Amino acid sequence: MDLDLENKIVIISGAAGKKGSIGETIVQYVANERAIPVLVDRNDRGYDYAQKLRSQDIDSLFVKADLTSPDDIEHAIDRVIEKYGRIDVLINNVGVNDSLDLESSYEEFMDSLKLNLVSYFLMTKFTLPWLKISKGNILNIGSKVAITGQGGTSGYAAAKGGVLALTREWAVDLLKYNIRVNCLIVAESWTPAYESWIKAQSDYQLRLQAIKQKIPLENRMTTPEEIANMALVLISGKSSHTTGQHIFIDGGYVHLDRVLVGSAIKENNVKN
Image (cartoon, rainbow, N blue to C red):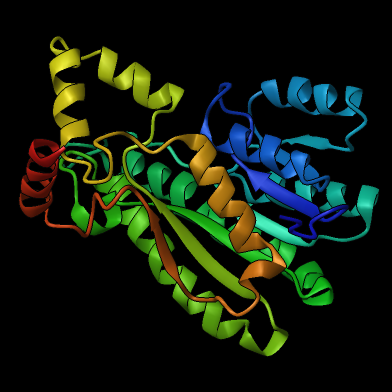
C-alpha cells in the first residue's frame, strides 16, 4: 500500500533507543516509506542510526537533545527547519516507565512528568507553527498504564494519563488548522527495555508466560513492528478523517474479558 509519505519530514522523539525499541523501529519503517525521519533523542546512538540510513541513500537527521530541556527542544526544531524548511509529522514517542511511586520525592516525580509528558507539550509547541503550514499531523505514543494502572509507577501513570487528555485537547484546538492528533496506546510489547525488565525477575520465564496468557489474541506480546505499521497508517492520508482517537494496539489486552476469551480459546483448541 502506498501511504504517500515520500519526502515527508517526520520527527520522532525518543528515536534512539536500542535496536528493536519502538522509536527505533518506527524510524526504520518511516524510512522504508521513503519519508525523511528526524531523530530527536539524547542518546548518541542516533548519530549511527541516521548515518546508516544516509549510507542507504535515505535522507535522515539526528539532533541530540535532552527532552526535559525546553532550550534543547527549541534548538532541535530550529535545526530541522534550518535543514528542511518544513515539518509534516510529529511523533511524540519518548517514554520511560521509571517506577517512581508514592515513596519517591517531589523532585523525582516532577522529573518523570518532564520527560514523559512535558516533552510532548514542548515538542508540539515548537513544531506547531510549521505543522500549521503543512497541515500536518501529530501522533502521541501512549501506554495502557494510563487506563489500567500498574502499581508502583505514579509518575509514569500520571504522565501517560496526561498524554491521553492532551491528545483530545489538541485535536479540538487544532481542528481549525486541519491538523489531526491521535494517540497509539501500547500494552505489552517485546522491546529491549521490556526484555531487560522481565529477565531481572527471579522467576521471569513463568512470569512472562503468565503475561502472555493474559493477552487474548494469540496469547503473545505485540511486536514493535506491528506498532510501527499502525503508526504509519495513522500519520498517513489513509487516516485523513481520524482525529482525537485513542487507538489500542494490544491484542485485546485492555478491553476484552480475558476470562471469557480464555475459555473460548480452550474450547476452540478442543474442537480443532
